[in-house]
Each structure stands twice: as structure tokens, then as C-alpha cells.
Length: 508
Image (cartoon, rainbow, N blue to C red; front, top):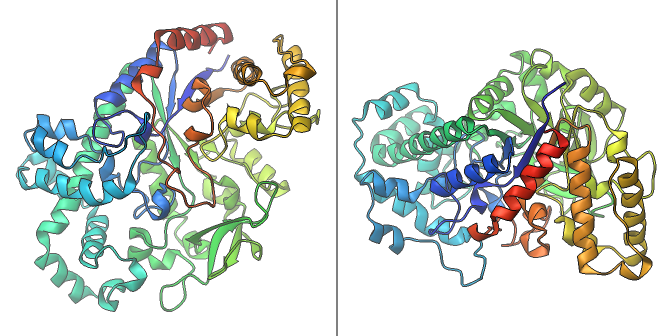
């Protein structure tokens, strides 16, 4: 019998901390302790890359760098690189809300200066740091960030042409004149990955594996577009003529206009998709499993004319399909295959053999053949109550009209009976908050009891929280996106034992 996993989805940023954002430090290890006691074998995180436009980790300045915001400040204090007083002076903990949110504006203005203070005291002669520099793995990122900072953090498209086009002499002169600035950005990566390795080793030693998350696309304002423009569909001025997104659907009449540059798949094919292979290899050294977001884009991708105000007008174009993955079928990859599906996507999934995603929020619509119903999918699946882009389960139920909620409850009840579980709701209870919580718990029990190899629950759905805890609302700029955090006290012994009992009962 194959191993059956249970896990929790929680971004590092959502962890408690005294400095305004979750980090790779002590609280992350405490969360690992909670997972281990609750018999959870997986911790799925969101991308750990530097956040970009809209504070999104899916619009990063580098596809393979680590976010400086996640570097633990208390660890730097232990190393003697900062004082407690300096950490408090530059703290981004400014909220008066009961459950504090991440304040990305404060992070932007305060966290980098604090890290620069730490770097000013860092011994650059440490052998490990010298070896890190010698590898040169983050040379492009460090140069990109130093030049970006010299341009007052403006986008790549607005830089002086000599830097934007990587004029060799201009670049050499800049790096020589700004050696300290470039070294600082190397330091952020050295310290990030040092702390990350310590956390991952701690998790693995406690029986917890980590699933990373890889965005399909990179940002137009990124190290990759700057260093390797030939890998993207750009015009002579280095600007995309078409950008990424998805067309209108049930959730959005305008579709989603992401704005990322599109890959030049024909060019990538010439070297056997080497850039993608190296990106995946690096990710699988960082994580035990990697979930690739918007996996359907490898079959066909949606191209929207640059400058569009929405995603209504676009065209479908062929991607590399399974050719990119022909030598990677045994890699620990999870495919996010949600969205507009067609025979091409189904063929891609069959040919790669990667586990597919199932979302219970989409399952109970009265359709007996709905592929998201636990009784309709196979073992090679990853089941979620919802993803980081969905409403929390409670918010989802609250937003339904009474007719749809009745269909949902009736269908949920029917599915529970098929799997030896129980959920009932009388017509008079349709709007009752307690019934919504019971429906959430019933869905979780179904997920655990299902044949799916993986069941991963957002922490918000484990806790039964509502709209205020939603992680992201796609296509909408809001300071509520990516900013939710939880309080340590919610991880009670009772919750821990409840999860552990479900794991044992479901043989996960």
C-alpha cells in the first residue's frame, strides 16, 4: 500500500513573530513541532521568493532567490549582528489589530535597512560565505537588486539603457563602484538559505516533509528577464507584446490579467529546456515535493495583448506539453491542474503521471460525475478543502445563496453516506453558523478518508476561520492579500490531538 500523507498549507509569512512577518526562526520550528505532534507528514508553503507587485510571491524579482523578509531577526541577534534595541526600532509590527497582518509597506522601508546594519557587522571572511560567493549562483540577482536600488527601486523597463541592456562595460563599472551594495544582496541569500536549510533539516528530522510552491511565470521586472531576455517573448525594446493570464470563467467575467511575460518555448526547446530543468532541480534540493502552479500552461497558455485592461481578449497558444517532462516523470512534482481543462491537459497529466489536485469547495454541486467528489477520483491525487486563491471554507459557505447552500449540503450528505461518514442538515438550519462549521468538519473527514495519496488543508480551514483570514483574492489589489497571520495560542492541545486522531483513523 502506498504511503498516505496528511499535511497543512501555511505560508512562512503567516507565522507569529514579534517583528511584523513570519520568518524561518523559532516560530517556524514550533510549527514543525505542532505538525509532528498532530501526525502531519507535510508542510506546504507558498513561494519563498522576494515578493513583487501587489506583495505577491507569484510576481517576484527572482524565480530562485529567497525573500530577505523571511530572514529571522532573532537569529541575527544571536549571531551578534544586531541588538534587540535595533530590532525593535526597525520592527514592522505596527498594527493594533487583534490578529496582526503583514504590513508590506513597513517591510519595504524598514527591513532592508535593518539587514544592512547586520551586514555591516558580518565577517565576509567566513569560509562558507566565501565559498557561497565563489559559486556565483546569485550573481545576477545581486547585481539586479543593486542596480534596481540605484534606480530608486523603479522597474527594469525604466532603467538607463546601458544597464537595462546589460552593456558589458557599464555593468563592469557599476559592479566595481558598488561592490558593497552587491555584496549585501549576496549576504541576504547566504543567510536566507543557511536559515532555510536549518529549518528543513529540523522538519525532516521530526518526520515532516516540505512541499514548495513554484509559480509558472516570472515577473517582467525580474532577474530572469534582465539576465536572459532571449527566453521570453519580447520585442526589440525588451517589452512583452503579449502577457499571461486566464480568460473569463465562472469566477471572473473579466478573466485574470497577470501581466507576466510569456516564455519563448521555441528558444527553450533548442537546449532541451535547460533553464526549466535547472529551476526544477534547485527547487527539489530545497523541498521534498514541488507543486507547480498553473500546470495547464505547459499544454496551452493564454496570451493577452500587452496593455489590455482585462483578460477578455486573448488567444490560446501551444506550450511544450509533456516533452519538457519526459525525463522527469519520477520527480516529486505535484501539478496544479485547476482552471479551464480540456483533452490536452488530461493527456499531459496522463503522460507525466504527476498527482492532480482536487478541491472540495468545487465538489458538491449536485452533479454525480463531478471529478472533485472524493468518490470520483483516484489515489494519484492531492485533495484540498480550498487553495490559497480560494475563499476559506467557511467564507465559501457564507457567500452562497440559500438555494446553492442546500444543494451543497445535500450533496455533501450523500457523499458522506457513500464513505461511511455522516452529515445532516434540516431546511431550517441552512443559514446556521454551527451547521457551516459541521459541514467544514465533514468535508475534512471526507478528505482524510478518501483514497487520495495526499490531503492538505489550509490552516484557516483547520481552524474554521472566515473571510478575514483569506490568503489571496486573485485579480484584486488589496492590502488584505498575502497578509493573514495566526496567533500561536490557536494551536491548542485539543486541536493537535484531534488531527492526530484523524490521521490514525484514516491510516495516513
